[in-house]
Amino acid sequence: MDSESGPQSALPLSAGAAARGAALPRRERTRLATTDEIKAAAHDLLAPSPDGGDLSLRAVARQVGMTPSAIYRYFESREDLLEALARDAFDSVSATLAAAVEADTSAGSVDRAVAVAHAYRRWCLEHPADFGLIFRTDRPDTRASEAWRAHLLEFYRVPFEVLLRDMAAGEVAITPGAATPAVRADVLEAARLVAQDAEVMPEMVSLLVSLWASVHGFVCLELFGHVGLLMEDADAAFDQHVRAALVAVRRTG
Amino acid sequence: MDSESGPQSALPLSAGAAARGAALPRRERTRLATTDEIKAAAHDLLAPSPDGGDLSLRAVARQVGMTPSAIYRYFESREDLLEALARDAFDSVSATLAAAVEADTSAGSVDRAVAVAHAYRRWCLEHPADFGLIFRTDRPDTRASEAWRAHLLEFYRVPFEVLLRDMAAGEVAITPGAATPAVRADVLEAARLVAQDAEVMPEMVSLLVSLWASVHGFVCLELFGHVGLLMEDADAAFDQHVRAALVAVRRTG
DNA sequence: AGACCAGCGAGAACACTGTTCACAAATATG
DNA sequence: CATATTTGTGAACAGTGTTCTCGCTGGTCT
Image (cartoon, rainbow over all chains, first blue to last red; front, side, top):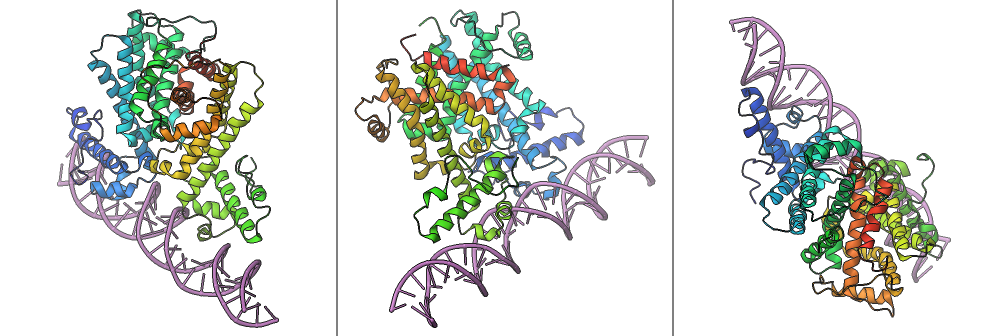
């Protein structure tokens, strides 16, 4: 709609250089500004075809009024730019989830968890390009970087905190089954850091992964047309899906 | 390993022109042969970087010893070739699932369903490039084609049949809840065609979508490193995940 | 048999692409 | 002021998808 208007912040969260670089020397301030301008332009051009499969570096250079080679002063390569966009997208969805649990007014724990799930689904449906950046099927090695790891852990913090609250309220009970999949030690450590004084059991992480897999899986199927092909009302189907997944781990009806 | 050896069938299922065109006129036979040769070459070149993001049409032309322009006698465009590969990949995973339920010797319904889920996960982990072709995040409009729809329905036939058998054995019970998400009429019709004389309730399709979303969701998270980052033993985690999802819909322990 | 023609492949060309390099303008620092 | 350092330019290179026109060749028809 406003693709002609000047560049604006690509994503809600990456409000960007303006805020970050308030007290920075002028040199770095302008650098961050144009960096964000490039990212914003790229993000705009990405909308029609997600994944960045055919995002042209020259096109974004044209959009920001620069020479293609000038972009390389800010990003090492086209792939580097795409990764930056992916990180911003990840931050965006993390913030959206955090905002959802913040704005939640429902009493029950199930409703709160359902609200988070709905927020995730809504974000994915409304930002298919960003979703595509996060879940690009090509270049899977990129996802192994240390930076990405940090974004991942930050992302899972929100649903983990929701789970923590529910357990504290006694609304979700862990049945300490014998065959609990092992959880990585560093993750447990990080989780205990988040949980402050509350107890953190490995079963919680395992449960979180299971629940999130169910939520994310439905969203995936929907984004690829599976749900639309089979079901009439995807909204209702999703709601029922996540409620069923949650009921399976609750003890109070 | 054998990227230098001559072109061979890209996927187990698309055994290809040799079988299909046994009784065809020579003209069409050779055409199908080179078509498969092109697809095989493209599939080989795809392995290192999935999704086909940087699959070069000229590279596959080089591999098969043709001029780039000659490829256009067999595929309208690079995208057309990728779609053909995606369809073959979808057929491959469908056949793998069918083979899994065929070879299944377990007695209980849960074990049979778990076997199908494991077969799906194994296929996805072993064929990341094909997975990437099926679940490419770019060009989402492609997935709306009629051809793709047919492949989709064929794919879901296998898990649906497993569900049918389990219900016939009385091992899975549908609780006819009041708020059942609506299922598309044509899908119900197709399902009844598959079910022959057995009764088909919309809840079954809804349940199938839910279960499959859980299975696929875990595989997705794993392929993108989420599971590996959080859990120690992904195999055990997956097994527990799908068993939990199945237990939630069973009545007999 | 010879004429015919659809289909196949080659090769050149066009408009792109990502990336690199040497050089000029602008900016900060001594 | 002089001097580095950063930022941007413009040309260039290799490679891409795609579209032409052109020959050739194998199968079909009379």
